[in-house]
Length: 302
Image 1 (tube, rainbow, N blue to C red):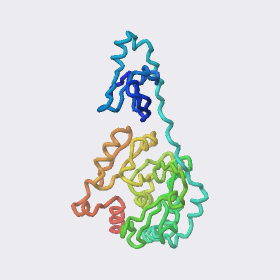
Image 2: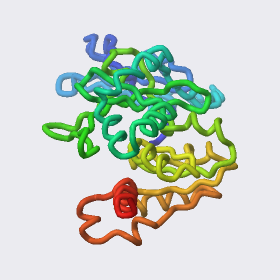
Image 3: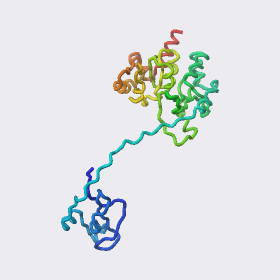
Image 4: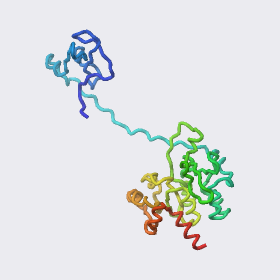
């Protein structure tokens, strides 16, 4: 866009026209100073009946004045806006949710997979909560490495199949929305991020869903399992925060290419093609993830 020195004043303000005296005159403004060029320099918007229009160039030619006698003011250096600070949820809210597991569908399903003791151990490690928003729903708390609670994701699972309830609608919501905590600046972190400070030696594995991270942790405890809480939530900033750790990504089927592009931008991060190599056409059509393969293999060896 051209940076013009003189321009008709914007904003709708009009003054008496030098010719017809009607308040229909729009003056030209010196954009360096914000002042009118001269009282007679402008245009009357009564084009049919008046038609008065004196431009700045015509005015300076007639008067012999130097239009550039006023130097252009130095531009103020533009500063980057301060990044918004994330909001946090009070720890007591999370603690109050960590009960009622016999009515928590996700935890009941975990018991059917691992047995009660191991299921409750996983529930405690990942600090899974119970929500009353939908009967049987759980809360996946996102706790950053400083121990601050970024948000809580409420989800409803089927207690028998362990799959999300998506009919008649996807049962997903946020604690800060349900509790009407306003204003709220949501800046998500990786689910399970609080576990990084507990063990600095274990390699890190990142999957898409919270359920997958929890189940994988039960079957393969040699890794710290984290989740992005959605395939589109993976970005380079979150991976850079894991600098110094050995990190492997385990994308769901159909997400490999997208995650590979992101991983290639961050040194030390690799992407497993395990699912891509093992998936049949039926697996792809069903949209299977790592949990499905882990459950399948462990049932076969049980």
